[in-house]
Length: 293
View 1 (cartoon, rainbow, N blue to C red):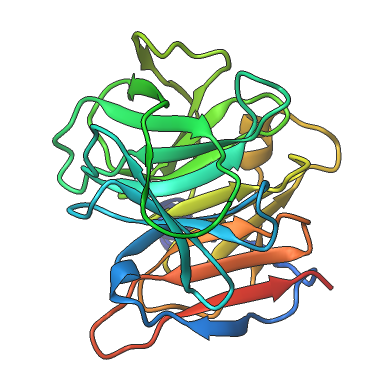
View 2 (tube, rainbow, N blue to C red):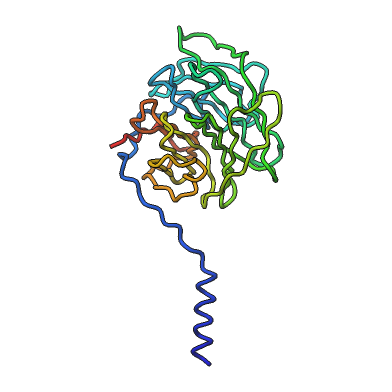
């Protein structure tokens, strides 16, 4: 009887013990290299970064909630080359930015995600889409008046979302919840209207938490997603559907943990990826580059 009771206790303990999620460490990238320190007060709260396609070697960046509705074209020294202002909108909580395809297949587009919601207060979220500018003579602020507004909501509860990804193959939009575990993946299939509210599809969950940014490679075959402590990496070698791919266990890329790192982007030529952090009191922030081996 004692042996039976002992076996029962062992089985009960095993059933209640959470299983460890094992991930492999990616060896495809070199350690992060500091390119430049972020010293501009204008970029103290940078929460989105995207490699420019029309301006190779430069990046689009923006600040988060409470700042002006501005995006900045910056260089690898983290200096502002040009400032653009979205006319007639506010920066409620801009959290991520992407460059990708859009309605005209001959053009590139910038997508700004006003998708943050720290207190889970807002039913509606917004993505602003406009043709990617080509830098001319840098100078005064340039106003962008011609843009589309993609309005959407999540099914069920209101949630904070901070990661925005555009699939360059299908033009589908993905957002990921932040403050729960597991986090949930939401999809908006192209074409999405700009004159009505979309309800995003919940297409999966991932055993992760605190997801703050994501990025597709230019060819759509590789995906990066990050939280404050890790960078996760998926390679779509067998052309799987994106929700199916992201349900698989990712590789983890060795990451230089930043003070408040909320931005990640592939290099425009797929030679590696970049991260940058908001400024944090008493800590330095840098633009990092992780070169592909």
